[in-house]
Image 1 (cartoon, rainbow, N blue to C red):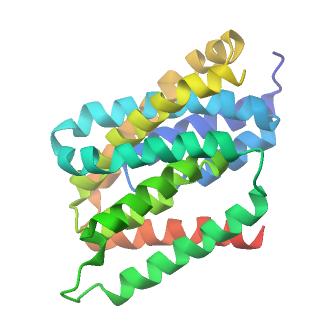
Image 2: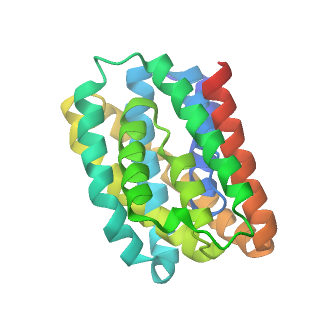
Length: 243
């Protein structure tokens, strides 16, 4: 695989942002996806990106492993796994553009509901039905549009998780999810020996980004953390709705 300096720059930036995002506020995944799309065709970009995300997730899990809410994880992941399988089977029979616009609308709706319920005593996000819906939606979204992040971010935020618990739970969730997706990606021919070899060169860059992400998270308070999560979610939603 011959790579120009521009493509190497895109890869470097993608690896750094993947690491930084996973250990801090998240939400930069859409930028990484766009950078990879500029550098490679859709199939190659997915094959290169997934192992990058797994490495970044693994670093985040190692650092925040004591902060993970395992009870929440056990509740939500089974429905996500079902969503991934559903997404795998329907991806050839659904209009991706319609799905992405619907997803963008749902993200904005969840954000608005979250703002409305910010200081209310009613906590619908702690309802098991909503947990199941979010889990299924995240599983389908990750297969069709690599967009489970905003749904999970808004849901975890409304549960009132602390910064570290939020990042720890999110990291473990996505490590398991991405490992679960791995056989599907290999089966589809997205990940090859060539793409994995390329990934190896950028592991140090991912680790550097992850390390700086940890430092950044320590510097910001909870109110700024919430604002950044919501801002990133709005950007993703608007991208799906308008482009």
